[in-house]
Structure formats: structure tokens, C-alpha cells
Image (cartoon, rainbow, N blue to C red):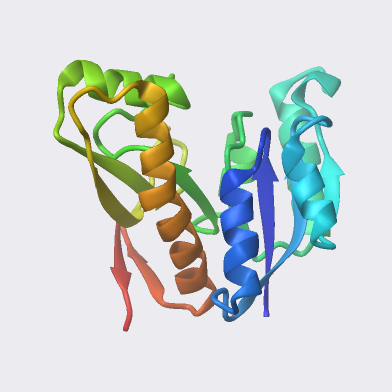
Length: 208
């Protein structure tokens, strides 16, 4: 059984999707063993506690440098024997040390169809604001492995979502979460835990 550690910063809706999937028996081969937050007041911590999941808090501002923070986070994750790390709305940058220590073992969910509306600065509502400005008819979400390029790691799953005339960023954000993020993130985690993802360079092969 693979140990899944989820990194959060806010409300934890994607964490809840994972908890719900686990409750339904959909995360075969894995179990959420710890939730780590960059924010001691994150509601995601309450979601974890309500479901009997261990929690930890580690804040970037408590460290003098990015290197010190990276070392501490790497040590924390190794101490939890993490097989898989999931970024579920984690708003702190991961450094090279963390990424190299868990190569192809960190999954992120991005609220757009990469390579559109992604990269540095594209997070939260800004992603949806830019999609609406561009006038795209379809957006969606992407589950991908994390590497040293922001939103540049191998794509695992994508799901398209319709953009409707008159959408606000908030309305579109909700639709993307409900129709895409909350569906493909648990699926990507399950595929990893079942050893059904093979990475070939920057591409993935999903094994049946």
C-alpha cells in the first residue's frame, strides 16, 4: 500500500475529492497518510483531522532561505515514507532538492489544459480570467508530474470543460473543479498507486 502525502495551503477542495475517492475504495493501492500545510489556518487541515488523517504544518517564512526550507520539507516527506506527494492547492514553490528527491512521484493539478494558461504566475482565478479574455470555447484541467519547469512535467490526464458565454472567472473556476479537477486528480493518484503510469521522457503511457 503506497503512502500518499498531500500538500495544501487553503480550503482543500481537491484534498476532499481525494478523501471522498478513498472512502469509495477508488484509491486502490494507496492511502492518504498525512496532510502537510504551508498555512496553519488552512481549512484543509480540518478536513484531514475530521477524517483521521495526520497533519503537519511547515511554513516557508520560518526558514532563512529556500535551501533551508527545501531541506526541511524533503526531510519531513522522507520521514513520512511518502511514496507519492500530491499538490492540492499548495501555494509554496518547491525547490530542486524536493523535486529531485521525489522524481516522477509528485503530482499536481492545474486548472487549464496545459500548455495553455500555465507557467509562472498562472494559478487560482488568474487562469480562468486569462481563458475568458482569450475567448476560448474549451478549457479544463491537467494532472501532471512536477519537474523543475513550472507546469512543465509529464502530463498524466486531462479533461475538457465547456466555456459558456457570460461566464465569470468564479463560475468557470467552479465548473472546472467540479467537472474536471475533482475527477482526474483522484484517477491520476489511483493510476500511480496501481503502477499504471510509465514515464517516457516528458510523455506518459497509461497501462491498462
